[in-house]
Length: 274
Length: 355
Image (cartoon, rainbow over all chains, first blue to last red; front, side, top):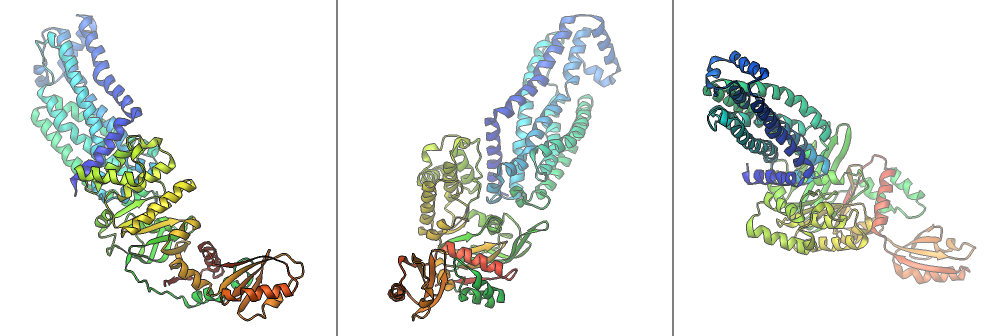
């Protein structure tokens, strides 16, 4: 295993993505919608509405949350508590949806794309092993989604602190649970999703087929990740750590299996069944 | 096997002499190559589903020489190159590239090979420099060694002026030059070129072929696939004619031609109406006379008999337009070999010769 080659493959793929305006423009728009535009409109709306019936109702709904969670919700007014709860709990799944969507889009095209463009021939004749190629592609697919999410998360943190912070006694976000979610749980989920998508990308006939099939893989995964991410935020730190450990274990196992699934001659587009 | 001899009787334009038929009859395979083989394929078979791509293929590429794989589309040339580096696995047979089995030592073999595939396999979004750096880094080059290597390779193939441009904007010729430059960055011992002049104008193709020749002058081994027979004519030290996934003949071009046509040939262009050709067969040294559209093709022991032929024709009242002593070309050899192979049906005609 030559990590230099793996990094070279990943870096070259990322460089191509950076140069592909048709990729990063939609990616930026997607991140902006989820992390900036929707939260800003929603939180500003609640803050400016004042103590109206809708906000009262939402505030009362918070009483249905577990007691431990209720204790963590800050704010003295109904809109303050509602804004805090939305900022901390409602948008949690977005942190999963955005990176999985972006990384899956990149990952689905990565191996089959080499074959379609004819560059798979270059990789197949190169000294890079199939493991190095697989891991390089995995890193190159993981990075755009994760980096976009972290940048979006930074923007989101700034927005909620500026809008909600004054109502709940100052800057409060990210909470400890959010740090665990972003740095521990999320990469594990990305690893699971991408390891599956890359295996498929190495086997299908076209990028279009890969995109279609990746939807079948990622939609259930997004649903699971949505539930687990919410659970991680609602639960204790210990629960979050355990959820993260489980996702990492599954992700690493799936990656190890995936490394063995890439066949050199599939890069050439002439393997049986291709 | 008798089919080969029968085939010799109905070749209107170009003869398939008895020598070729005897090759087929004997299934003669001689491995008297004077140089060690850089690449050796033995009884290699490879199928894609039910479609065989290689069938019992034997092939040697002598070290330090240019070996040209000749054959029509679908003959198995590209697949043969792919199994040489281990990019493709075998169904049967064995391959030795630079002395090693590509399936077991693929990484070290591919590190010592430079490959230019039929499509240049370049990353269009990246610049020329990026493409070269990618390959260099995969081969372990970094820092100043990489920069020097890139500058030298790009300069050698005349692509240095365009290195900072995006490859998507390159012409076909520029892409080929960049792919060639990429193939030599890591100073490989073995170069595998699959149709390297495909899509190039004649001038660019000539330049590329000259550069390929330079490669062997530096001690490298080159294996090149082409169906452009004219290219192979001047370039090949060793040719292997492939068809339908198997080798038909192999050897150095001059020896193959001589083995195929042991006697000299003379083309006659005769203007006169009465046919004087029957008289020629009585001349000492004339072995055979075959009428052609323009006159005749005469098989002779050697070209010294030409004055006698001319004298006989003049005496018979013929008006001679042209007398051309001729060495058969590689192109003629290629077509003759393929015709013979067809006449043999599925019979294999495997020949390897060298002087």
